[in-house]
Image (cartoon, rainbow, N blue to C red; front, side, top):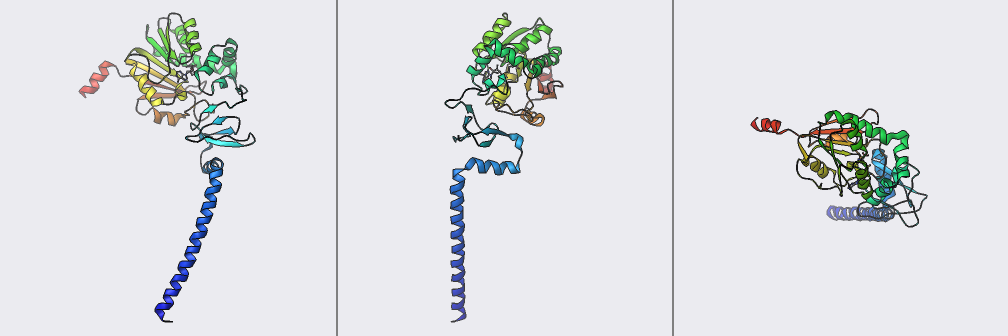
Length: 313
Ligand SMILES: C[S@@+](CC[C@H](N)C(=O)[O-])C[C@H]1O[C@@H](n2cnc3c(N)ncnc32)[C@H](O)[C@@H]1O
């Protein structure tokens, strides 16, 4: 055998070995793909969570809820749990299930449906339970927001509450500033009816929050408390809040602290830093309310005078 023939034989033996190896790798890869295809969520989520931050996930008991991660549909035996990334699923009841209130009355609304809010806002017994829950944290929050906002409101100001519920915050503000004019919108019929009954001189409309049913610069104070985190397109809604606020007016946004919030009805979970990033396009003062620990952002809409000064500079 010549040296050339010898080399050719060596090369083809190596090529055979490498083809065999590639074949094995392919077979292992195919087996893995098959296995992963059968259990995509458990495996994918476990591995991601092992490397990442658990606060970004909700624990879902499989079979307790039907849920729809983007583009997929998964449900399974009750004995298993899944970790699902927040804001990546919707909850809905599956046949034979009923709503749970074992974590509190507020959980009636965890599917974020107007009819569920109707159930809460339209039932005095549930409403009293809701207000009393967590050592009255809902009432404390309303009073705390009102204490912070009332000093920022001028006499006779036009104040609108977006996602007004039964008008708790507007009532608390009117107790502090009796001359204000009150307005509100909410998608729950019972909420709007409740607010109208408590503030008969106010104007309340039923409306699904996305665009807002008001003209440009219609109000001096625009409130949106514990509502933004329920909405699919919060940035568009903030634009709308600012649009309906008069020059020199304020937009007040309050959200639960997303770093500790675990309510599965929420679509967004902003902690202090995340809220600052989200509200970056609008100049706002953000602070933590000392008693209830929720986050409050105040956007000051520039007055005509400061707009003119800005334009000259
Ligand atoms: C957690 S409650 C907050 C109520 C009140 N702002 C407060 O701070 O107590 C959320 C409110 O937003 C309303 N809501 C939720 N999603 C909505 C939507 N897409 N359009 C209109 N209202 C909505 C609910 O009916 C409910 O009154």
